Length: 217
Image 1: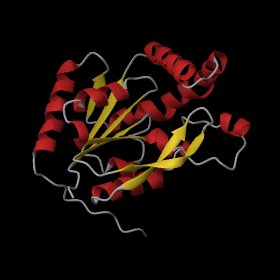
Image 2: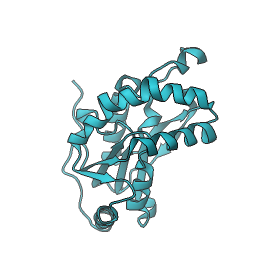
Image 3: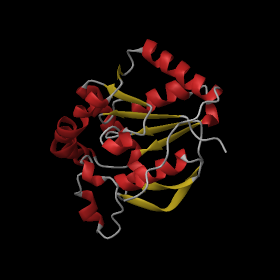
C-alpha cells in the first residue's frame, strides 16, 4: 500500500474559501487526494442536551478532539485506513456512523484551526492560510448556515458577533504565522496554479516520507 508522501494543512477564517482552494489545487489528481475537514473532529457531545450543545463555542480550540485527529493522521501516514468521525451540524454533534478513509498520495487537513495544533503542524509538508475580507466571510457564513444547515438568521448573526468574530481574532488569524503561504482567496491564481503543479508532481512521483509515528508516552 502506498504511504502518503505529501500532507497539506489549509486554514483560514469561516467562509474564507478553504474548500475552494483545496478543490482548485487538487482537481486534476482525482482519487489520489484525501480531504479531511477538521469539523469532523468536534468533540462528541452526546452527554449534553441539544440546548446545551447549541451554546458551545465551536470556534474555540477546546471544541476539537485534537488527539484523535493526530492519531488518525498518523495512522494514514503509516499506510493504514481510519474510521473518520462524521458531524451533523443541525444537531451539533457527531453522527453515529463513521467514514472509512484510505491512505492516499496526498492528504489535505482543512478547517478554521487547521494550523493551530503544534504537533499536527509538524506533520504537514505544506501549510496554507486563506485570507479573505471579513464582510465577504460573514455573508458566506450566513448563506451556508441558513440555506445549507437549516439555522435561523438571527441565531447565525448572534453567533458570529458573540463567538465567531472574537475567536477569529484571538485564535484563527494568529495561525497565519505558521503558514508557508498566505493565499488571498480568489485573487492569487498564480499561487494556486503553482500549488496544483506541486501536488500533481507529488502524486506522479515515487517519493515517500521519512516519518515515523511517535511512540505514545
